[in-house]
Image (tube, rainbow, N blue to C red):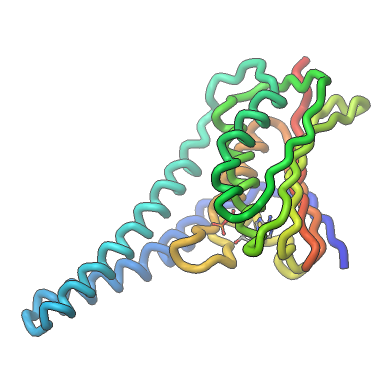
Length: 231
Ligand code: ADP
């Protein structure tokens, strides 16, 4: 089973996003309010007060994480783009992500290239795209495995690309066209907000590029990010 999806539609309309936010924040808020009500009733044992307070803390942290990611998502205002070297950003991001990979018994391999990979863009935003893809790749390999990051170019189309390939669980065909949607996640509460790929997608589109995904369930997944070459 092999599926490829090219993502071209503009995702994350305000309506979808607002409904998602209401849902995502509504659930933990209900929990916080319920627990606070119990504490305020004065009927809890000291142990129950402590456990309720811990629940409130956990749910608040979850809301903070959602809000932080939303702000990143909303902050997609065009920043001044300059000439940047994709190879350098990729190499720097791999160095930053290696400790996380090691913690999950995953190997992070960079197949670099000597060819120039200049694009127009914002280095920190491009780094964020790669960080999201690599951390997803690591998360997809709970028992360890290999993340391979490679670079290449399509000279006819004047485009350069970076692939992030993993040997993880893969993505079923029923989910392949959903992964870029805001708030789509298969991760447990606290581990994923479902915003990573929609943010990555927004950034790449802003750079005139695109992201494609190719996955074989049980074997692994490859995300390819393509950018127009600097002219
Ligand atoms: P989050 O990581 O918070 O869930 P993302 O938008 O980054 O949000 O990813 C959405 C979903 O896409 C993930 O929950 C997962 O189901 C799927 N996904 C993304 N990357 C991979 C990958 N490399 N391998 C398998 N599934 C993936």
